[in-house]
Length: 154
Image (cartoon, rainbow, N blue to C red; front, side, top):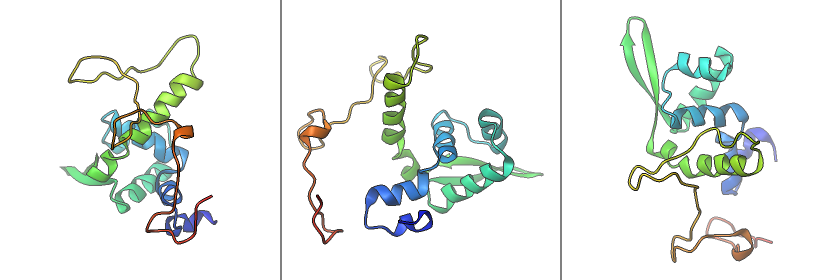
């Protein structure tokens, strides 16, 4: 597999990694979910070069994860807003945050807590089966070929 053709692979993970699989893109998405929207705010928060930030934002717009919305005419400036496609990345980002909290933390504890507005409680993201609602664990899942793949999965 070549990096620049991952989005053409018959594998959903490869196609996803082709769009969001580098560190800067993931950190930009983190900032989006923290409600950062403007170029200067991304740059200030991430300490990323203007060139890299511009490239990553253009890619996220091209793939329909963000949309550019003008907020100033003179000079012309844009905000970057998550689309529904972008919002659908939330479980992935939250799962990575939870993994980091669990396995990469230190004695100070979690840097951020996430509170569910409906019940008011801090929470941990949990992946559940869409059919029965039971929590999912890797050893309890069987993978088999779907309609988008002809050969069997090992």
